[in-house]
Image (cartoon, rainbow, N blue to C red):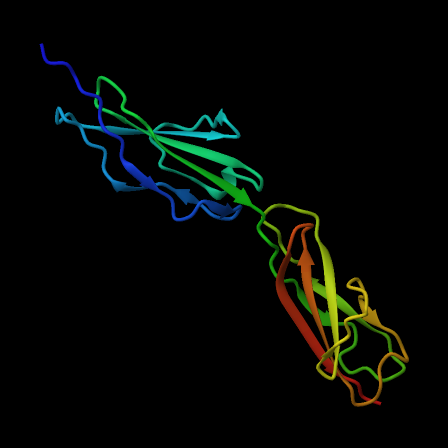
Length: 193
């Protein structure tokens, strides 16, 4: 009597092992599973999140961005099956990390201010965050190209007396999600009289 031999596992890879919340994840078969009996081998994909089965069909070789959130740790086991027995699983572990916010769209409350005017930063379009984190904004002010490092990061505007005729001002604004700053938005103006 000849007994069935279990299939050998495939070599499986991911494009990386730390993903952002806005990225789809797909397993890639680098080397196919093999079977000494030359049986047709089917791959079964078993996804688990935080050690618990994710409840996904075993035919799915990937997950969409909407199925994961930051802080998740996933395990993928790819199990070869020859129609009679399963072979040893190829196993991958990967994590989902914070996705930083997009840049907001900004302008100033007054684009041609004088030394007597207040100038505030206006958020025309808020930054977006794929993780749905609460966002705050950090502001960096530059006078004539020099960063004013001692100014607080939450300073949203300039008061009369802080600006002088002929000065060039720039503000850089980034959304902060509690873990990282997002993409840069900037706006500038020149003080009139």
